Length: 511
Image (cartoon, rainbow, N blue to C red; front, side, top):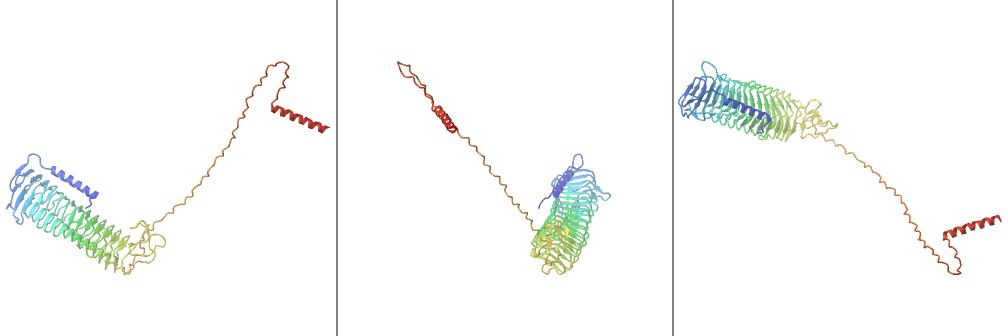
């Protein structure tokens, strides 16, 4: 079982309640008892030995308020005689309050632990097995806490609350009783949380003529004839987050139960029906998972119920339906995922039911021989398959087309699943939206021109090498030697010659 946030909160609440109750008790030294007795004064009493096969009609009788009886794990057993009680908390003259019975083993009594007209007490960590009734509260035994008890293998019921209100049952085990694990009769505003009620011959948990704010939350009820049974005008109760497996029927409402809420339960492997309503009107079945049953959700002569947001999967043990209506009308069926069943939804002699925004993917999706409504008007809003509009239902075998892209089929309408919807059909079948592909823009690369730098070549100037001039050494004159004519450099000679040439040319022109 998946433990969700709300169930953890209830468990923490239960631990806190038990801790407070265990600390409660009378002040001063405890009084020890070792035999059957009557307790008529407030205080704490401790059983210091076993009491076996007592023939007393009542072994320990508490007739005073403000009493703690601690069995210290000892056993008080009887002989199995009718109308006998192991512990009897009851005064003939006044209501009792603040009575705690804990840590006791009681067996072979008609009632193991019995509270009558007793309020604000506790019954904690006892083993009340192998009696006719394990633990019985009746006649205005209100606002008591029952926690951590085992009430198994009793001939009738494990735990019974009758004509009593405001009691809290947390963390008890009521298995293998010959009739019912935990039963409420004519009782309201009780809370059952975190209990286990398995393998009882009739019912794991029973509410009979019990109405108004009974909360049945986070319990386990497996392998019973019915996991949780609401019978005969048990109205306005809440069943939530329970785990029900391998019962013949998981949740069953019978005989004019109305105004109840069945929320977020897991119901599986019931060879008959997972969740079934008979003659039950105006209930809410929401957020449940019904899987692997003979039939997932069944409405028989039941009207005005809301069946919403459930997972109805693979219910084929009877080769039957995910959702089945027989002689039922005015029900609202919406937001359900119905998949893997032999028959998705089956309506026999049922009309005026409102069926839209469901997901059908089954071997055979539908049969309807009545007159039912299969879609609402086109309404903006996300539908069960993620489309943009609400309208009809999704059908895995619908092969029509959406011509305008609104997520609703425009052809083959009203859709009747090859004639299996005999009258009318779905005028706005849901079509899986085609993902919109956003084209990837083509990016034209910007080509940056390559700029080749202009290189200015500065010619390398070859240095003019002026040859070193060899100095002219004039030798000293000796005797009659000629006077030397000084030599002119070649450049000077050519310049003089040029000048002379120009003078000559001018002279001729004048002549």
